[in-house]
Structures are given as structure tokens and as C-alpha cells.
Image (cartoon, helix red, strand yellow):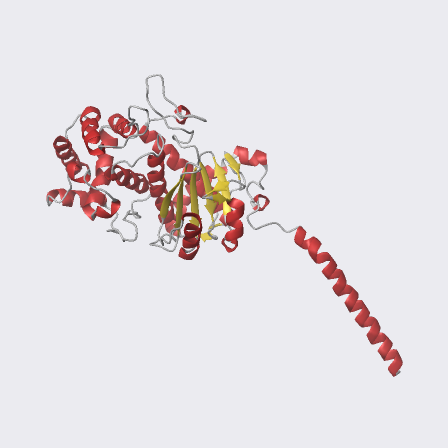
Length: 409
């Protein structure tokens, strides 16, 4: 082959290569335009974001709602690497940013039962799945949140239909029910589950100006929503059962705050005891302990709390109700207080379920002469209500609880 012929052939190959590259470049924008975000509703294999599938599952949307101090779109942009799956259910707005989870043998039975229940709403769910993909995990946490809601409503003995839509509501007998449909709150309860401490701090600092490294509950006053932000790089929360209970514990706190609207704080013993009670119904091996901001609370990995209650009673280390009512914050709680408050709630649920629900309702209903929320003199009001609704003085309650605990655990 002559030198000229070879040169012509090389030029032809170069032109063909250039044309191919130009063609690929021309197609690239079109290809990019067809890409959707990793958390786009259409990427959910269980609903594809289709309205009929969402309705069947009892869901409202897979994103596009207000959250924190902004909304899901802004959070996606700010925390782009987190790949948050968004789900809005009847009473919750959930953001879930964890990856797939391989189900260990010890969790298969419990998780399998949850998947069977979830399949009734989402037919594409495999109840025998050995690995849970991120969307499936998000759907599970939406279902779990609604179950906490249901259990809370069972304990307070209230039908959610009594709560107002659009304005404050009093029943004909003068009982106050808050200012919104979500147990008295206008906004739904929000949950954000993140994979790292860094992601959690980044969100908290941007939205609330906080640099707290642990789980945080917050009141978004402008939207009248109570928010829970947590991450799995604390304790044993990489284990799904532990995270499940941890979320339930903190949601219980927020539901109690929101009941009949969050206008003032209610007793520490009731908050922590009820949260322990609901968390331990899920699995007693994993327990959450509240502490004051910036401090690590007293904690224990013991699962048999009934035995611990008997020990503190036998050693006369169990707190009295009057002592528990003197607590100003969670950081003042010692380990025996956690055991005791859980057991006291257990005692009341088992022996005085109606009186217990009435006590919670009454503690959330105080109003002044102008009809405004009034949390003043809560210790005095609590003592009076305890006598009226439980039928016991503090001393009588302490004795009755101790006697019951000795024979029940």
C-alpha cells in the first residue's frame, strides 16, 4: 500500500471515530434528561408511585411535602449523597436514608411477620426476603410508625376522629382536643432516619441550629409538627430490631407531647415510662434512655427489667411517686428511675387502664380562664388528678405498685 493510500485510510478512520464521538456526545444530554433521582417515586418497586397503589397501601405520597423547616426537595438538594426515600402515611412523614439490610437469623421470625402484614397492602413484597432493599425498609418503618400510633391510641382510649380539622375544638361537655387532626397537632409527625452522625448533625444544624450528635426530638412551631431525627451510628442501632424500638420509643414521646396539642410539658415519669413500655413491647433486649442535652444518660443492656424492679424494691431503692414528680429533666433520672417508671406504667395499664388513660387526657387539658393552655402548678394538679382518677394517694400508689411488682415479675 502506498503512503498516500495509507494516509487516506487513516483519515477515513479518524473521521469515522470523530463522527462516533460526536454522536455519543449529542445523545448524552438526552440520556441524562431521562434519568430520574434515585429516590424518585417511580423507583419504588412496590408502588411505582402510582396513586392506586399508594391508596391501597394507605399512603399519601412518596415525597413532595414539607419537612423540618423546608421541604423534601430542598433536603434532597442539600443532602444529595444521603439518597432519602420519602413516604407520607396517614399520620407520619418519613425520610429513610439507610441502605439494604441482610436479615440475621435471630430477626427473621419477627421481620417475616411484618413482611406478611405489609404484603396485604403491597402485593409485590416478598415475605421471605433475606435482604431488605431501601424502599422495602422505608415501607416497613412507615408501617411501624402507624402501629405505634395505633398502640398509643389504644392506651389513651381515644378515637382519632375526635380531633379537630382547621380550628381548636371543644366537645359539648367542654373537653379540649387541640387544634389539629393529628392527636391535636396541625402537622403530621415527622421522622428522619440517617446513616451517619455527620449527616444527622448536618441536618440538625441547618434546620434548627443544633450540633447535637445523638437522636433529637424537635418542635417545628411554624408548621405545628413534631420531628424525630436519628442515625444508626449510636448504640446498637445498626441492628434493625434495636432501631425499630428506638424509633418507637421516641415517637411515643412525640405522640404524648402532641396529644391535645403540645402547649406545655407533662411529667417526666409518665413520658419516660410510657416510652419504655411501648419500646419493650417490641423487644425487651433493646432499650433507649433519655438524658439531658450534651450528657450521656445512665443506661443498661439488661433485658429482664422485672427482675431489676424486684431488686430495687427489695433494697428500698425504688423511687416514690412524689420523688419522680420532682424531676425537672430527663438528665436527673438514674437507672432505678427508668426501671420504676416502666413498671409503674405497666402496673397502671394492667390494673387501671381506664384511670390511666383519663389521667393522661386530664394532664393534657389544663386551660386558664381565657381558654389558653396552662401548665402551671403541674405537680399540684397531678397529685389531685392521681387521687381522683386512680383512686390512690401517692403513698397508697407506691405501696400498691410495690406489692403488685413483687408478684408479677
